[in-house]
Image (cartoon, one colour):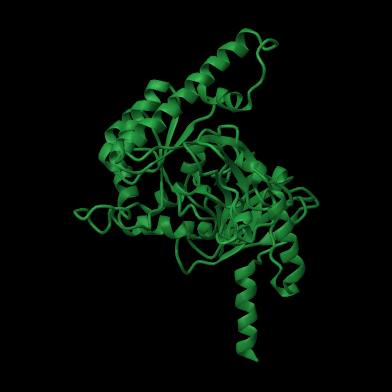
Length: 419
């Protein structure tokens, strides 16, 4: 995945834009302890803690509550009357891989061919993207960015939304192998795609056997080497499927291949809820803000899907639109689910704790607990509420600069109005 054109365009844009339009500058790593005191702490592991303290040391949470001593050089930040939540996680996006849709060289979503398991999203992640600060200021501290093309698109990566380089911004990579399930409407095209998919897995298994038997005699093939952790069930497959027949076929295929499956999209997931629950297949639902696919379905088919999955006992999380430009709209998708029956607390967990557990990053983020990364947000209220202000975001203990292109434009035209 080639980066040079994107970097060149970004550099030219940086030189040409006026100073007031320059977006967020990554901050330095946390150099001394910081204690947030007096706020309402929503750990998402128990009841909120009123008037509690969060101690952040070296980018990690060192203490939560209040029954602990603070280091002598601790910086105290009074957040009385404010709320603290874990930063939100967007479970499926192209953030960092796509900048301007009309400019091809700024879009790096796919490679030539249908089978590309060796593609690594983190390597193509553009840390200076204008969309990243917009997401961060909206409380999105972690994004799962993924390639999109072909049948096996490549490996998705969990990235934080603050940093100078992609290496610095990696939270975990890979988090899953992205598979785009073929449409079931064209039988011939579907069968060709499934033949390619099955052939890839067969070849990867043969490769694993050969390499296990004698690594010296069998050369490394980056495509099949990337799939070995998937075959060993160390890395799940993230299967994009929405229509009922797609989901059913994907469930059967994953069982036959003996791989761990996470369903992405899942528009018709409710119709196979029993199968999903029985096979312990989690669903990353999204987008929630959408219209029904069939004339006979209710207008709230998407809005009420998270609540229906919750009642059915299916493990799920909520993602917004996949477009990089809309990553910041994640909380509105969870809020829509609340309006149509999902308990508010569960909706918050669906974009934090539950999603972290599904993706295998819950030891790092998703809740506010000692030992986890200090990736959290200070808000004026529930982050799913439209009127709530995200007042400050910390990424790995870094106090990020709360400025982005949107805020700059707002201030620009506010100044015009005042003049």
